[in-house]
Structures are given as structure tokens and as C-alpha cells.
Image (cartoon, rainbow, N blue to C red; front, side, top):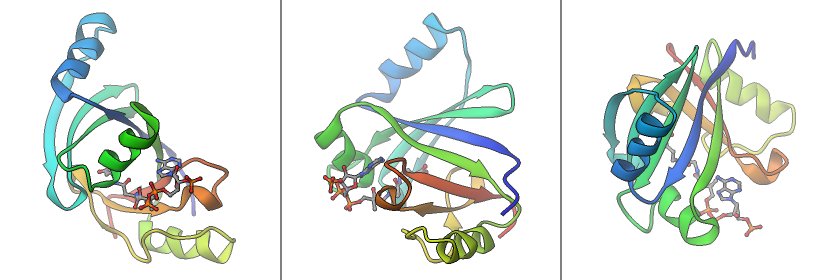
Length: 135
Ligand code: CMX
């Protein structure tokens, strides 16, 4: 699997603009990118903290994963993403080791990364993303 670092922490928010203000004006971080990921039904905003990113996620639809999460739990930490060499291989290995996959293979996510998720029911409650630059 070879996890090299926490790539990002995903945080579900009600309103991207309002949340960006908090991260910039209170914490003094700088939002360096805003991107819509259409197939995930989210708008994202990114901040760099050392080598790790904070990814804010606003839902574009109540049917999307973030819309459903916020309806149930409200705003807050949604997932943790680990950087690996090859997300598809890491997913396969995680499955062999007992995790339940949301994604059988990696797919394209924000910032062009290849991403795939492990189901939180199999990871002690934390939605876990594996991501890589290569496939
Ligand atoms: N963290 C912890 N638990 C979570 C969770 C999360 N982020 N999201 C859902 N759950 C829990 C729910 O609370 C629920 O638990 P209970 O059965 O005890 O009530 C269970 O998982 C099922 O939740 P659900 O609301 O019925 O949602 P679904 O099963 O339809 O979907 C999941 C859950 C994880 C499969 C779905 O959210 C998913 O596919 N996530 C991966 C994709 C994603 O999150 N995309 C957004 C980020 C995109 C990006 O980073 O670019």
C-alpha cells in the first residue's frame, strides 16, 4: 500500500463561501483552488497546510454523498485521504485485508487525482480515501 502522507482531510460544509472566510480570516490560510466535481455532486475548496490539504466540500445536490451526510450529521469532518503509489492496487490490497470497498477501482477526483473509498462501516467509522497521482 505504501502510504506516504495524509493527502487531505475532507470537511463537509453548508456553504463554501462562508467556510472559506473562516479558514482565511480566522486561521489565516489561503484558498488556492475552487473546483466542482460534477459526478460527486460537490463543489470543493482547497487549502495547503504543510504538505497536507484541507478540502472543503459543499454539496450541489441533496442526493449526493455530502448532501446526505450533512442531512444526517451536519457539518464536520467527512473523510481522511491517504496518498499511495497506486490507488487501484491499494484498494485491492485493502479489500484482501478485510476492508469493504466503495470503489472497486480508482476514478478521477478533484485535482486530477485517482481516488477510491473504503466504506466507513469497515474502517471503524472513518470514511477513508486512497489517492494517487498515477493510476
Ligand atoms: N463517515 C462516517 N460514516 C459515514 C459517512 C462518513 N463520511 N458517510 C456515511 N456514513 C455512515 C452513515 O452514517 C450510515 O451509518 P448508519 O447505517 O449507522 O446510519 C452509513 O454510513 C450509510 O450511510 P448513508 O447515509 O445511507 O449513505 P450511503 O450508504 O448511501 O453512502 C457512502 C455512504 C460512504 C458509501 C457514500 O457516502 C460514498 O460513496 N462516499 C464516497 C464518495 C464521497 O464521499 N464523495 C464526496 C467527496 C468527493 C471528493 O473528495 O472529491
